[in-house]
Length: 395
Image 1 (cartoon, rainbow, N blue to C red):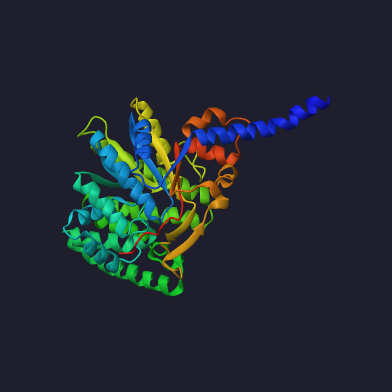
Image 2 (cartoon, rainbow, N blue to C red):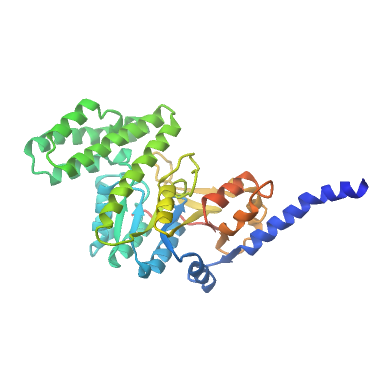
């Protein structure tokens, strides 16, 4: 009986040792993504990928640096598209600006005219990535909703590009209302004061009736979807908010993909999205997001999807919040990591720690790993943790 009790007491110690061994065998550290160790790893995990997802912590430089490295690596393999978390109108404008001789000047002008209209891609580092993609003959797809502070930009786009006099005349006072609402929002520090809350069905239907082509109607459709999606959030219907946004992203991706199929048999895409939109399986917000949709599409095409999680352990990030006291905020994500990684953080001596999660799946049943660790193991293929992350640089 004594030896039996010792045996059962030793089981947790044995499982912990095995777990640490598996983590050690499937992780490594580098100070740069140009190191041979990292390049050898990428060479091993990339083959047969049709879609590569980079699920980022927004606001840190290293996510863009990583995306640039990956895009450069896979571009010769047929990856010509970067898919981002904007709507199609904004993606088109970002690609155009990136094609200019002095993109940062044009980007700053756009930002000064429409402050905070671009929530996730509005830094010097972002335009370095966009320019690299465009210079390589690549394309930028924007599959997300129109964001709340972006109404001004999209209404202006409609005004500048329509030849329909009645439509343009009706849009002008609406655009002014959108600018006035934004000013009130900043003054009151209230997202609820932005124009999306007062854009009503009667106005929307009137504009739809006045518009004369499918492109205009599509832009208006997305403005109304934005109101609908943010409306769920305002009513604290968070599942509906996330699910409707996910459905929209799938529909927008499908539209791009079907067009791409007219030119190539197997479109290959690098995605740079917030981490919750880059998961395989049930996402962090409990929906089956565009990333899972694409992962199944890759299987249908006898290919695979590759999912990276890129986040800082410690450092600083650009907040992207117009109401924040400072544009940059320090963070420490150590306690948000699974407990298995928390105990290892102090031993991380280099800039980047790469954990190959996919091989851990065969060990991730039962009580071997915490539920938090299992979530990462099954949602992503590779985890890239950044020590002392640096914030994006404002334009």
